[in-house]
Length: 222
Image (cartoon, rainbow, N blue to C red; front, side, top):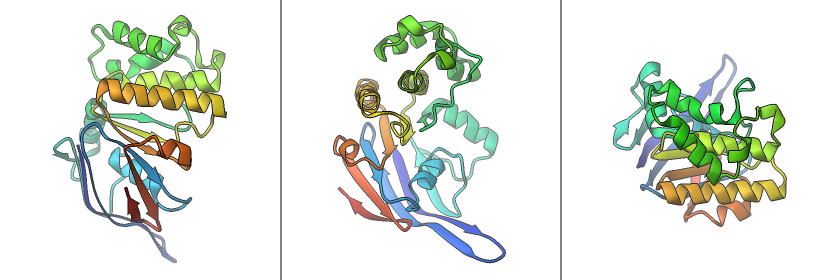
C-alpha cells in the first residue's frame, strides 16, 4: 500500500543545511498498523507530511496504492488526498462554524461524493459515540469529543490510507485511550492502512509494527 524508496528531505538556508531525512526505504502492506517512533527532531512528522503529499521530498519516491505521488502537481495531490488519504492531527482542525455532522461530511462534499453522505456521517458518529451530539458545534464539545469527530471525518471517504500525527497528544489519559481504541477499531473494521506517529510506548505496543527513526534514518523496524 505504501512504498518509500531513497526518501530524503533537506532544508538549505544561506548559512547552513539541515538534512531532516537521510534515505528512508520502507514498505507498508495493506491493512497494517505501523507506529512511527523516535525522539523529537528525528523526522517523524516530516516523514508523515511527505506521505500525505503535504510537502515535497528532496529526492526519492513515494508510491501510495500503486500511484507515484512524487511527481504530481498540487491539484493532482489534492485530488489524490481526497480519494486515498485520511489525516488525523494532534490539533483537531475542525471548522468552528460547522456542526459535528457537517465537519464529518466536509470531505465528501469537497470530493463531490456527498450523495448519501449524511447516512455515512451519522454511521461514523454513532461508532464514535457522538450521534446524539451531531448538531453541536466544536466549541460545545470537549477535546476528546472533538478528536472523535476528527476520526469520523478522516474515515468518511473510506480512504485506503490513514495517517495520524500524535492523535492523542492533546488529550488526558482517559480520552486518549478512548480515541486510540476507536482509531484501531475503525482501522480494523474499514481495512485501512494506518501509519501513526507517537511518543507513547504503550500506544506503539498495540501496533502491528514499530518503526523507529533517529537523526533522519530508520534505526529499528520490528
